[in-house]
Image 1: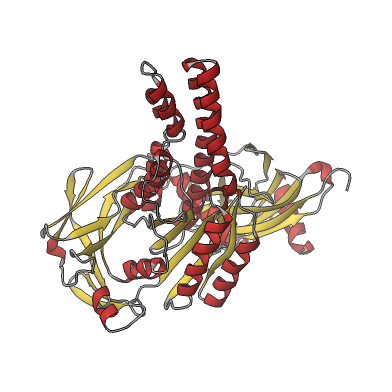
Image 2: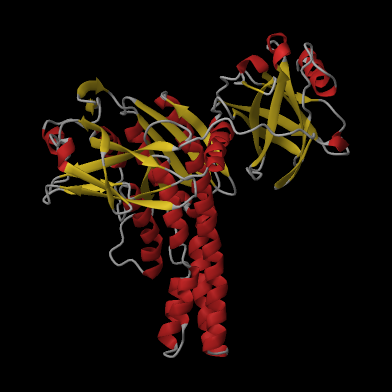
Length: 557
């Protein structure tokens, strides 16, 4: 810890700075999950400018012929794009090509994804570039049986080694979300991380026992107590299945938000035995078959998670994340309603994000190659859209002039609010260690008694802030965002505070070598925590994002 820095910050917040600049002390008192903010009184600065949010919307398209091979040679004029039913003008067009998969197989090549060459049209100019595959392998241990996981990962490991021009991350979800391996180009590390997953516990083994237990409980209720009691039992078991689906969706949502702050396309291979889109439908079906006048199937609809799946897909589209769900249970000739419900969620995520759902497969060796081929053989379009940050989902429709071809693409995106986008950057800092510091922000922990909680000192070089002259002063405004994650993977809610900055114009030059200081008193859970702090210059719109480990001792320590 840099004791000198802390003294400077404390001095700033308690007395005028050299040159007459008065620092503002901010007290942030966090109580999980909320944050209370107490701010020193200061007149907020006037509005300096109006921000018009125009964002470039990317639409990645995968066009194939009847054999499933990528179709080259299409041009900008072959596509029409509509947002919320209104046609938009394309501002960018790019095509990425590799040899057709059928030709690669005939030539004896095991992989057709070694180099992705792109012809990009921007303002009438052609440019050559390559595109890196960014692949997240997401293992849902909470919804996967150990045997199925081992079989799938063995095949995935065989193909990972053959990837070129790829960055891969390994993520697991059990009781919490964990990035086992951050993005890396070292595929030997990826292989090792996947191998180590074989020793991890997986709660998916309980799924089949829970299913049988539910069937037996419904049957007992029908025999002993009648239809109303059986409906009640069905609701009870459906609620448990729904909870598991919602936990998985929340984990995927957190991962998507963390990926949104990372540039470029991302592919997410989601490995699980399934994710119930209609939790408990098999129990309600059992009741309906036994009780002709029952409203069981109507009750079943209330447990649907389709709305949550649609929101997840829209968020993924905003983050340029394509879903590739892989059902680890293998091939089944006659899947029951429970299996069809499990696979329906996979279809929704794949179709809505332009990906592919890998279902009913015993041999999954080719899955990694297919994902890489998609990444390398696509058309990428973009258009400008005026966004309001209201969180609404906007639909995207792409029409192709050639009806004989098949097309996959992202079908919606979220008009994300300002706070959502900041939260994405903080999530990336917490889960992937992604940090950026153009403002030169300094962030350090402060030693204090355990009873006082944890504290951080934040210092911003005044020379990096954009200040505008107004009424004999140079004024600006910074906004501070805070998000934390404890050792069990639990996140706090996002919290923020606006801080006006005002320096007498006569003392501006003398103040430029000073720090504008903040002190954050955080009430976090005991143990290890990781705190992410973002500081945004509201005038210059520059953003710094940092993370800092914070350990909270117990009162007995």
